[in-house]
Image (tube, rainbow, N blue to C red):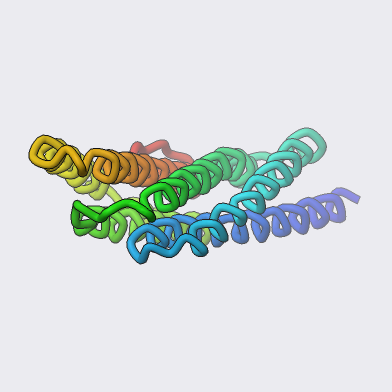
Length: 220
């Protein structure tokens, strides 16, 4: 009887992990497509990416409920307990990645009709680094790879430096060309959203290390 109960529990846990994997894929797509909609001036891509955020929201709610049920009814211990607790926290990071992607899409739609008075080079570089961080963090989480999660160490500092540079150059641009204020201010907003995405990637990496090893490590 006990063996059967444990078998059912692990079947439910495997199902839960599959749904989390689906949520990871949606969040990763949102991060990538939101910035691409901005860089390529594609309002249709922005609108479609925003619609997909509803799927992320529903998955978060469903996964959270399943986590609570498994914790309450199955009373997992050791690694199984860490898995469920980590999942319940990672889905919050995934939801925030989706939210920031929506914010970037909203900026893309806002500045689409505006004159492009500021190059998007720094945003593209930030996006490349953040996209890599998110992909790496999610791969480490899904595969339970603590070493891969640790490889993100130091990357957040690079994103922070780029964020500071976007602000610095943006302020200088607005001083020299008042007509650029709306466009440039929105780019600074995007850089802030990307900086926060990098933070959530680090959160996921740190949670993955805890899930695998039982040891807490802050990734910066």
